[in-house]
Length: 208
Image 1 (tube, rainbow, N blue to C red):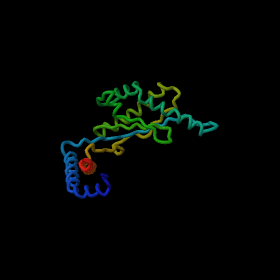
Image 2: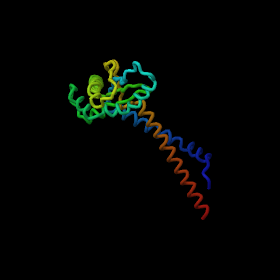
Image 3: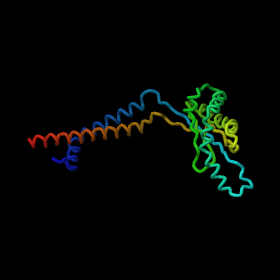
Image 4: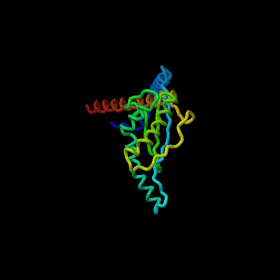
């Protein structure tokens, strides 16, 4: 006995009340979870450091750019070296373990640039911007000593309070929508499986 799309549609219509109920229940659960307890807020700040050699009197500036670009992954590795992380830890006006610093700072290369972006996160605006600024300054100072062939790093403007962005780890709207979608998927899957199982049993009994 086949289980057609028509049969499935009929089952969905028959159990529409169950789908609606589970959507409401899971959406409500997501909303309640988002609103319960303390909402953890994360702050993020970033500072950019340019890394390029002097192109004055270079015959082919484009070739120099490509050559410098190929070294950016090396600079990213240097930026995460333990020597730099240790120096950042000592320079910070607040306590952070090296492991916490590694987790809080992301070193990225903006597309088609000879630059590194140091994006730091923290529990406050002050901690985020301070970590980003100190990390960038420390890399500028120590980076060339770890890799002497590096172009001279030039840090751009410091991160300020106005540059900092914040995000809540518990977003009521997103969790409510996620809960509703989860409830729909669970109910639809359950209805489909139960329908297939019922038709299978019916087909087996008819053979007997």
